[in-house]
Image (cartoon, rainbow, N blue to C red):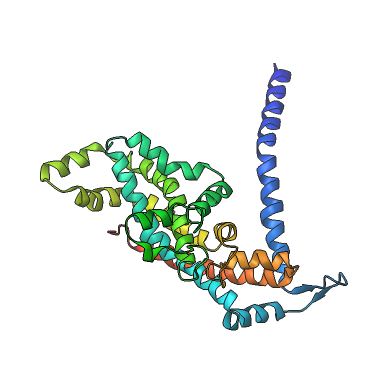
Length: 303
């Protein structure tokens, strides 16, 4: 009997080990090791022609600081990264919340609308970026012909090629592609609200918007707070959208800090890229901490 118990314990141990060994190894290699290596590289400079790696101290940090101050590419990169935070909090999340609220009311064709909203979230970002770029293409896209058809010819333009509209177009793409994911999470949170609260509101004769502000938002505030934090931290890693749609152009109008780091790595400037990444992580940590403190202090906010 003891032999059988020992065998069961051994099999249980091997099963648990097989389940945890991959995520632990992944964390140790791609999080701990990579971050430590990045920190070390920030104080070194790699000479691509000779292969020598020299210790340069804080030179990489000074170089990045000067570039952010004087180089337009880096100015736009930092500014556009910070602009994503209010875009996420003031536009993407409210739209996602309103969409989730409407879905929870089971409006006509709500199953169809759920699929339409969530569909971009399950497709590869490469596919939806390509489809979106075709839509706004000035020659073969559908956006400009629609504007011409409704008499708004003056608004037609190369949406991703015009510096005055490129950033807004990329941000519109981010909202369009992200609203489904946020709505799905918020819809799950709304589904856990007790129906008694809705019934009380109906007896009091409150409107739908009042119900949304006074009942729904306070009840799902922890979920909203989590999405705000995720969106804030995600702003400092945003690069693929700009890379696929405009490659950071035109004239650096859609450049982001993460995309600038990718370009530095592509050029072999590993030390400078590491220093920029560390500075970006410090700024991101500070901004996220401030927002989290504000969210914790204010348990409910009216959109």
